[in-house]
Image 1 (cartoon, helix red, strand yellow):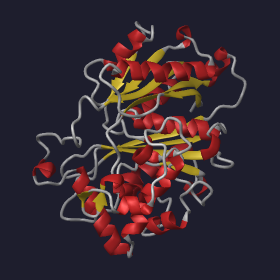
Image 2 (spheres, rainbow, N blue to C red):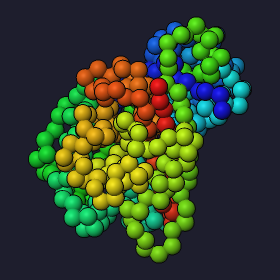
Image 3 (cartoon, rainbow, N blue to C red):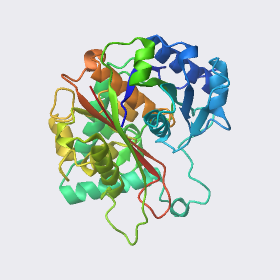
Image 4 (tube, rainbow, N blue to C red):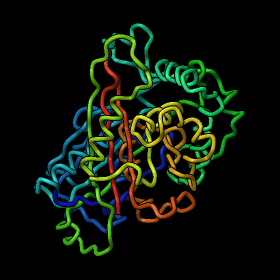
Length: 382
């Protein structure tokens, strides 16, 4: 396949913004930062791909109009938390097919004026009708993991401590301060054994990237090496019969193996991971599901520092969803921005040494009776 390259990235800081800071303002801010990063002008862009969940009809077209990109092909992509990565996948596919050479990909969400408390499940969700909502499911996952693998509550809480330590060095993170293990363990209970700090926040934000073919790179006059999108896998959940194993992570394993095949890589060669840690336990079981950490070892790896910056396999150098924030449509593209900055040596105090090959994972939504809605896995390298 022809190469697809990320040539520029831009974000706005994630957080909670006043109503006058609209979805369009967030998205255009991130897009302009990405364009400025690589010297791309409006006339260079041939198409726009936008991932969002709560943005309403033709949000992408509203954003494109404010950017002065009206008239271009604009597509909107909703796959819950995997929406931003799905938009990248469609851009990657279009460039690989030769349709475009220079495109803009945006992930954006304005949640604080649309979501009160936790994200509500669909009214027709049979699992949710019986109380099996996301928080309950991850709490059950944590309790089962602790039982099956002799893991401790402190080891799971170490995910939160690690990711907040990383986020201190990310200027785009919603939270940029360290927290202690004691703070995690004594936070307000949400669903036993998880507390408030084990859960990702409700957030607003946007992230964007300029994505090019090699021909597009030449058009822009860029001669420096840029990270390549080696593969973007996308799978959906399969029907589960009976009680099963809540931490089996078949959906993650299938997505990971498809991405490794697309990229022609050995997962053992991956230098760092941006992981969808919507809850602390999720980082652990999904890393194991991707065959990146041996089953049952994720909690101990975290506690021992193996998944910290400077460790064997750094996970979430950006701070992850727990501390960078989780504006659901923006998360996948925020991960792509982090991969770009790390692979080009621009991550500052959170830089992973000698980063050459990286992976980003998102899991979006639930479908009653299955092991998930959508999982995306992005592999990038220099």
